[in-house]
Length: 83
Image 1 (cartoon, rainbow, N blue to C red):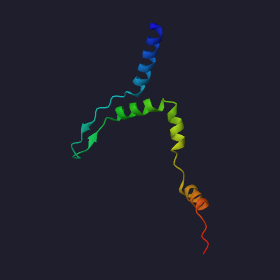
Image 2: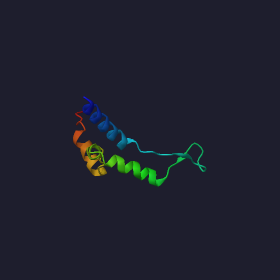
Image 3: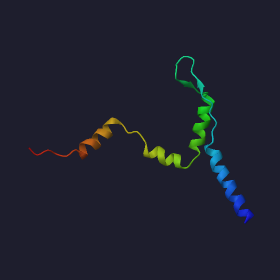
Image 4: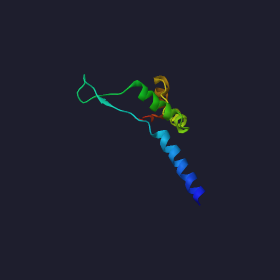
């Protein structure tokens, strides 16, 4: 029983650690209401997210297509008018 609880705790901690990227936003002195982040913090957050296997799935699903492809889809699905 103890081994199962320990294994569960370790696996949970490893998943949480992957998503726990520390970022320290600072007020932007040149933009009231804005914030500044260190480039290294943003890059570390990006790297942590890219390590997740679901990143590739979502990146493919949210892929941006060229306008001519999108317009072609729109044309294909546009209902024809009969007047």
